[in-house]
Length: 171
Image (cartoon, rainbow, N blue to C red):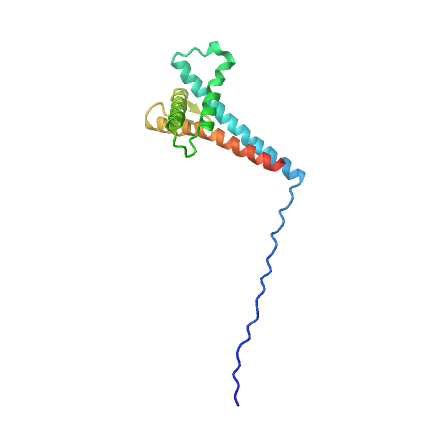
């Protein structure tokens, strides 16, 4: 009598693979990362200082007597940055928070724009092969707007990221 052969199924046992262990970072790598993140912080500070200087130049051109404040004048851009960081609406529906934040942001971008156009108009920049900035018109003002936005947002974002990375690295 003929018999039928049926395939035999065996139970498959899935053994989860353990995650590969993260390679511990040695002192050499930690120091290298720290230096690189320190450079990022220096870049953020440099961008902030340039934007702050353009804001102070704008205020001086509007007749604000900053000389009487001496080094205290740097509290103005510091307060602007603090307002942009800590009043960021973060999904808030409180209109006052939005209004203050947006007003400070517009002043920051606008004053950096004005300070940059005053400084850069027609200036020769010896970077790379050298070039002359346009003295007026859309190219100058377009670049000023982009840089005004960069001066408003980049330093704080880069700084927060770098500090967070340093805390993770050494924490």
